[in-house]
Length: 318
Image (cartoon, rainbow, N blue to C red; front, top):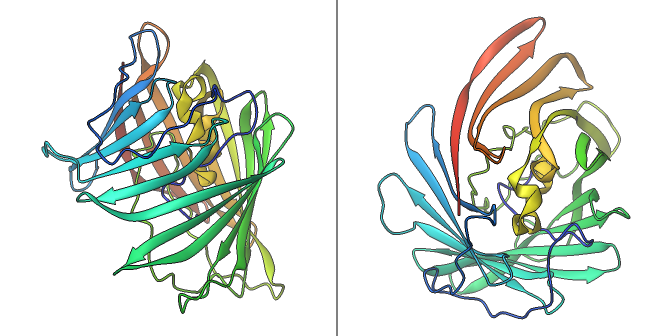
């Protein structure tokens, strides 16, 4: 899967955007809007890594339209953010760009353009004093505003922008929940080494472990890599009801499904005895929204199942 985090834009009424224009805010503490307790907007997500026991925190800040304005990233007991990410919106409410700052310095960004039910995002990073365009994503939406497919393009590894299709994901939905994901990739591109890995990492409690792209024995250029199926309960997903459904990761669309995932199973067609399973259990507040998420990862190969660790997240609301 391509990114740990990327902003995308839903094009239907499932987004609660209204017209507004706002310039980027490079000061993550200078925001005028504070949501009230009935907003159900996420304020803070905390996780503790199961191996290192390091604590990771993401703080969410919003503008007056209840849209995500800034996300701040903290590690352990730091009182100042290690990094933060700022969003700028077009006058019609769609996202124009996001900018990622590390130690107060702008280092990465992604710009978006729109054409009908298609959105194109181009990711760039700063190397010295020069911006390089590394990756392009093309998002295709269905008639209800949910993502139908995402196509990824990589630029030339010599840092000269020349887009080549790398892979694409196809999604299927039912009752506003993602039920399956199919990933295809270009054999001629999959083994290339990217000049830079995206440094953004939103603490995302609903995202399964990264599925590593693997080389295939197939001879065709475009190859089926893996299939993933999802199961959900009937409880409320906080991402669905708030403006955060404007910023999500294409390699984890179920994050923004209406309900909460309980199981995610990935299989590989070229390895029938192999599968990866992620299971979720929850604790809830009085409004039936999750306040604690426990995630367990297992891996099955040739009839044997192996424990691959666990994660635990806590969610606080305004």
